[in-house]
Amino acid sequence: MRYAFAALAVAAAACVLPRPVCAGVRIAPRPTLLRLRGRVGPPPAGRQPAASLTLELRGRRVPFQVESAYVLQGQRLGADVLADVQPYDPNLFVRGPHELLDRLARAGPADAVEMIGYVRTSSRVLLLSAVTIAPAG
Image (cartoon, rainbow, N blue to C red; front, side):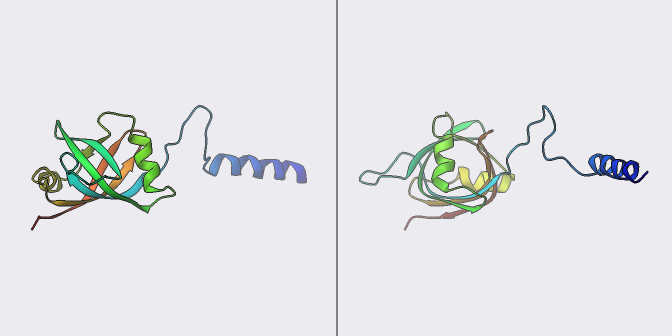
């Protein structure tokens, strides 16, 4: 009788407790919160960017020269995130609130741009949560 109660308790726990991996189901990795600093446009003469990306912003292809990439939340390095998206064209699809997309679309080649957003390298989507533009001069 004692074994019957133990078996019943194990079976009940197996049904109730969440399973991290189910047969045939893939669990997507958590998104990475990333801060990118750089400039829109082609690389300036005499300056070597950390990476050159092509962003898809509202159907337009926008070149972006990355000066720094820093992971704010996640278990990766900024360089790893950039390396994961480097082989693709466009490298990232930029999504987010209209206000942030408008701000990024207005940035000029001389402006310093900082973007913060969640990125999933498997889908190459950068979901913006902040965009800061520092005008030149």
